[in-house]
Amino acid sequence: MSTLQRKNMNTPDETRSFPQGSFNIVRLGDFAIASSAFQPGWRWSEHVKPLVGTESCQTHHRGYIVSGRMGVRMDDGAEMEFGPGDVYEIPPGHDGWVVGNEPMIGLEISGAEVFAKPQ
Image (cartoon, rainbow, N blue to C red; front, top):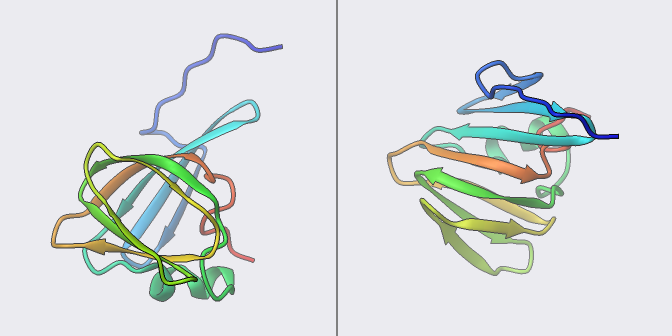
C-alpha cells in the first residue's frame, strides 16, 4: 500500500559520481528518480563506459532537461540534441555528451536505478 511520503533531492539515498558528472538518486518505495549534473566536456563513452563495461549506454532513459544541452547518438547513427524544457526518451544503445560550455542539469524519471551502476 502506498503512503504519503516526501524526500528531498538535496539528501539523496545514493550518489554515483564519475569524472565530470554526478547522479543523485532518491527512492520512494519501488520508484526512483535522479538528478543528473554533467559538466562541459562530459561524454558517456569517456566517463561512464569504463565503470559499466558496455560498448554503448544500455540504459533506457526518460527524463527532463532543466538547463544546459545534451547530444545523443544512437548505435544506428541517429542523432538528436536536447535542451532546457525538453522531455526525452532515449532507448538503450547510445552515447551522450554535454553540448556547449554550460553544465547539463536534468531529472531522470526512468532509468535511475541502472544508470552508471558499476558492474
